[in-house]
Image 1 (spheres, helix red, strand yellow):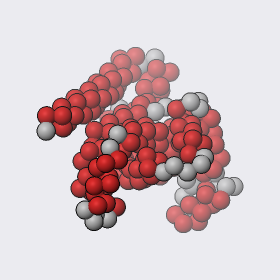
Image 2 (cartoon, one colour):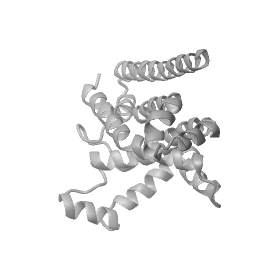
Image 3 (spheres, one colour):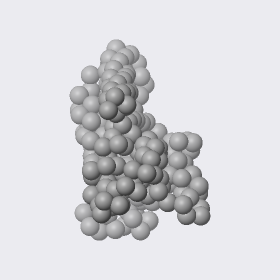
Image 4 (cartoon, one colour):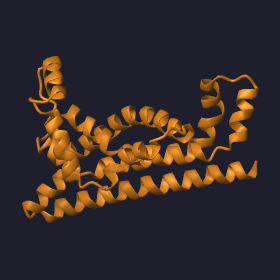
Length: 224
């Protein structure tokens, strides 16, 4: 059992959530409320990671993070390290390939809030910040919870983008999915099976908890 890779995967998932959730929250709320032309193109752009092969996403990210790209040069000048094949590069890639898993559930949750509720909040003199904290977030909580759990589970299991952007550096970029691949290549099926079972269990528990808590919240809302 490669505990170093498991720990790194959990750290990557938590770092991804810390950056992604606030950005996804305000993006989802804006998409739910806006009626601008071209909205479908914006939603399509954000949904691209769902349909593009991970190697394609990983390739473009690798190019963007390379030493010849502006982003890669900026990061190297700032830190003295390359962005590609590093943990910060993995976090940046993880945030991007998890965008649809975070934005879409939140957007649907905000869209489900009746317009009458939002208009009542404005009539009561609430600012957008007060309406968000006191009314919209409690009502959209099932979608936010689903986005959190799905992004966490997806980060743990991602392989293609992680391999392209981070490579396979022990203790830095070797996640549990990469470690499972290494064990299979080395014909260590016992270790690969144990880590696969652990990853399966974590993912199943995470998703089941997400559905269970969301259903309980919805039942409680209907009861009131």
